[in-house]
Picture 1 (cartoon, helix red, strand yellow):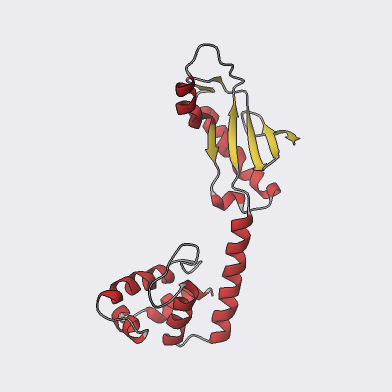
Picture 2 (tube, helix red, strand yellow):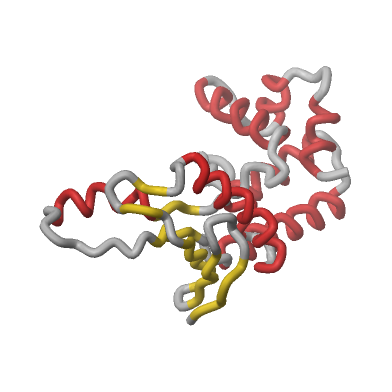
Length: 189
């Protein structure tokens, strides 16, 4: 069982208001504490992946105090906080991958402002749930995304032309070249 599940279990049937008061919140500050408590109980990262700070506690301090009030074993809490901190640290270090849709477009008379405005058609970001995985585990997940993109656009981007291939950028100087169905062609630097 993860910590957020244990927190949700311990909160069940208890007044969140009384929990907030036991943590030292009262009046108008209790409202924000209630929101944080609900967020923690429904997040496998305990809300530590966002910026949650108030005048009383930082993110980890809030979780620790909440667990103290709920009488959750401190060793378990510390181990879970360390695990989550390590996971979030790893995720922050991961390169946010993206895809470039290659059409081999060559500018002739098109105005620069129009090209800039439509550039987003040729680039899209991958979800964090994909790019935190090892590269070999990302490929099976991006293949259907690229195949669907190709079909959705009928094989062409309206302004840029026919889609020839996709370039999956997974590091500053590394990309995979994939065909229109997402199958691997080459790994380039």
